[in-house]
Image 1 (cartoon, helix red, strand yellow):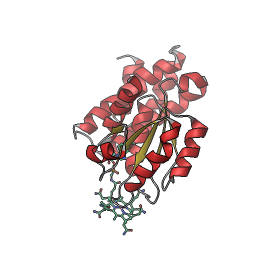
Image 2: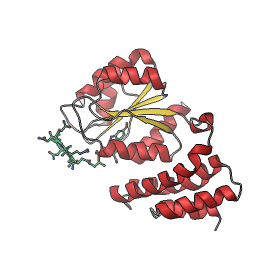
Image 3: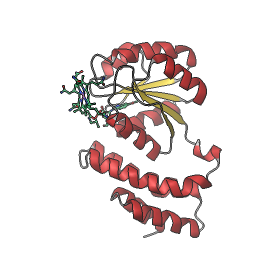
Image 4: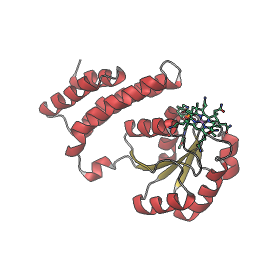
Amino acid sequence: MSTLQEMAEAVINGNAGKVKEFAEKALTEGIAPQTIINEGLIAGMNVIGVRFKNNEVYVPEVLIAARAMHAGMDVVKPLLTDSEVRDKGTILIGTVKGDLHDIGKNLVRMMLEGAGYKVVDVGVDVSPEKFVEAVAEHKPQIVGLSALLTTTMTNMRTTIEALKSSHVRVMIGGAPVTQKFADEIGADAYAADAATAVEKANQLLAS
Ligand code: B1M
């Protein structure tokens, strides 16, 4: 097995120590940082994403794999130029106003990072005004909104309205959110889970 394949396996197994070791070994072998990310770290997270979607692994395994992926990222990230980091695109993500739930949002963030996106996480209880300010500052291609309460999902509508003049694509998700609701409020995409969020982000950027 090549170092990159071993690294991907270590990500899948959630072994942060091994991932760090293989990332360092790959660098000494002269493998480019971007290749290490794409063919080692992201390759491993892609496998986890598919298994999560098929209910073959659950939230804890995804979080452990994401932590292992981050251990590898920490080794190679300082060697990347700014343009390489931004290569695939920037996604700004947050939980809407009045809502403090962030476990699902964090999972979506980690999967997007695992898929090669630069993700700006603006946290929880984020007002429409704060989203607009953050979009002006970070200039993402996509904004991701998360909501877990039926009382706060209505704030997705006001956030989308506030973002209209910013011309960004908006993806929404969270337990009470549906495709029907996404269509009603004019969201560009809806994702039921973190793996689908990656697929939808890829589709939005390709369209
Ligand atoms: Co809260 N809570 N909670 N809670 N909580 C729920 C959501 C609830 C369904 C529980 C229940 O009553 N059965 C209920 C909502 C009822 C409703 O509105 N229909 C509820 C309630 C009522 C409340 C409070 C009002 C309780 C109270 O204080 N009386 C309060 C509200 C606080 C607030 O936000 N203002 C509250 C508080 C809390 C805690 C702080 C204790 C804690 C949150 C901790 C945290 O997040 N840091 C909490 C928790 C943990 C839950 C449950 C148990 C679990 C949520 C979770 O993390 N799921 C939840 C019950 C449940 O769902 N079984 C519940 C795991 C997570 C991986 O899934 O977030 O759905 P999920 O994310 C998924 C997808 O939805 C999707 O991908 C993720 C991964 O697959 N997804 C996206 C999510 N965001 C996405 C964004 C995307 C795309 C996909 O694109 C951008």
